[in-house]
Every structure is written in C-alpha cells, then in structure tokens.
Length: 280
Image 1 (cartoon, rainbow, N blue to C red):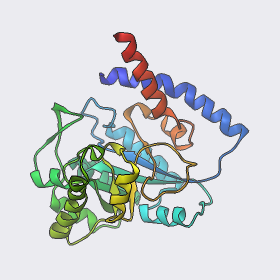
Image 2 (cartoon, rainbow, N blue to C red; image 1 turned 180 degrees about the vertical axis):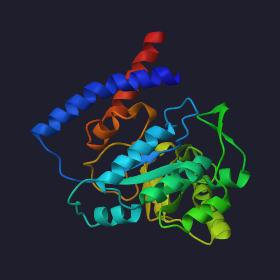
Image 3 (cartoon, one colour; image 1 turned 45 degrees about the vertical axis):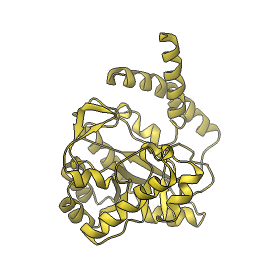
Image 4 (tube, helix red, strand yellow; image 1 turned 90 degrees about the vertical axis):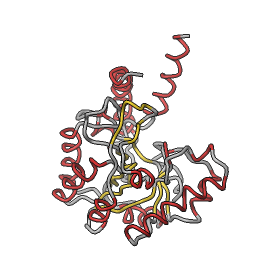
C-alpha cells in the first residue's frame, strides 16, 4: 500500500480514536505510568510510515525534553519490576535495527537534549556494512551503523545498546535451534567488537510467543514486543511499545503519549483487511 494511502487510513482512524480516548479519560482518568516509544528511521527520505521527517522527530523530542519525563530503559524496568508507578507519566525512547541516521541524526539530538535512548541492533547488518532492503522492497534501502559508531555511542551516557537478532528473521517461523543462533550470535558479536554484552532484546516485527519468550529469557534480562496494553500485567519479556509513525506527525503525537490512540494498531489492521476483501 502506498504511503499516502497508509497515512490517509491512519489519520482517518486517529481523529475519532483521539476524541474517544480524551472523553474516556475525562470520565475515568488513568493512573500515571511508563510507556515505551518505538522508532526506526528519522530521515524522512523513504516513503514509509516508519521513517519520520527529521524536523517532526526533533519537535517530538523537544516536547519530551521540556516535560523532563524521559527515563532510561533500565530505570523504567526497575519501576515496573517493583510494581511501582512514577508520580507522573514517563516515557522510554527505543529505536530498532541500527540505521546510520541514528548516529548522524538521533545521537547528536539526544546529547543536546540530555535524553537517554536504547538502540536495538541487528548485528548481521552491521557486519555486512551495506545498505539493506526495507519492508521486503529492494528499491528502498538504508545504510547501517558501523561498529565504530556503536562503540562511540556506547561510551556516552545517552545510548544503551540492545540486540535485535543477527539477521532479522521472523523468529516464530524458525525451529528452536535457529532461534537460539539468532539470540546468541549478537551477544558474541557485541562481545568481540565492543567488549560488552547487551542485556535487552527486541523481537523482529514485534512478533513473540511464549516459547520465544522462554528462549529469550535464557540470554537477556528483558524483551520489547508490540501492542498497546498499557494496563496489562507486567511481563519483562513482553514489554509493549507504542510505534511512532510518520502519520502521527505533530498533531497526533500528544494524543498518542496520553494514551488516547491506544487501539490504533488493531483498528488499522481490521480496516486494512476489510479494504482488501472489498477489492476482491
């Protein structure tokens, strides 16, 4: 589906969802909590929802910095593991894959605003060192970070490195032995190149199941997945994230932070399936 169609569908959903979410919270205010935000790329050059224009991204981070509400990944885990709620809403910044623009665009902004973030790296892409296709489209590519860049960022107080498998497969389609390779290989590569061992993991495409979570738990302290279940029972190996998309832009970022757009992903999938059936 073309980007303009995706954005049109999502914005058509966001407006009523935001209104409903605002009305619901006015009647039944939610307790302060912690939400994990999920980003990918921020150049705006790719026709993908996962690639935000940098000026939009910069405004989003400036908004969060002004609220002084961004916490490091491990600090958030400590709150959640203890079953405690912060006195005010808190957000965790996470980024997937390890695109070069994280180093050229995101890292300097994090340092300037004094914001911590976690980058989940697909180590095989870093090893290959060549642009790789996105969303199964060979015409859309993005360059990866290098080990030198990762080492520089890991030495700073602003970036925590996590693992995102070695080759970015859909883990739920692999036998257990292959899953084990995808979990262990990043640990070996990080240890060899940077002398560190990532403690946290991100499932590719945010797809998980209990069997995968059990394997991940043997090697990592936590794992982030998909979903918008802010009120769900705490599970360190199924931490939900709010995907930040291009269609959120400037106007829907605030409602998403407030929880007014929870349910957007499920509604979008339902609408997308309905439109596909109508085309047949």
